[in-house]
Image (cartoon, rainbow, N blue to C red):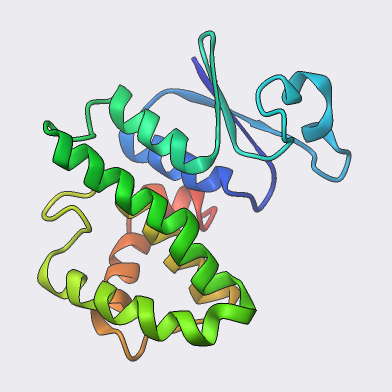
Length: 184
């Protein structure tokens, strides 16, 4: 069975959300970050950088939430049938983990980046329910989790971006989101 390693309030909840959406069997291994369990040799064998999340799936070990999302999409045949679909999924996951995450959560760049990032994202979501079109995907987990976090960490209300506000609400209403991101 796949094991997901994470800490309290970590990006492991993003991976957990997708595992719940997939109804995939997994075991969550909570690492005590204050006790530095993530820096012990057993976990460093999974992620030599000592960051979470990490997974072990049989003999396969993988770290970085975005890479894990793409792996799970591939494993459960949710990645798309064409090279273009797979590349588009990877594009959104990479956008979330680098561009959007930095734009929202690095205070020094937030004022400049939000006006650059959110209007086009709002337009995309005004024309389709999910980032890849009509179907929920790992792209929505990657981007949606960060937008959701922004509502209570910054806080950002998206009042100037109604399609994003609707998207965030739609995602937050999903049982798997509530179970993993909101822990309800």
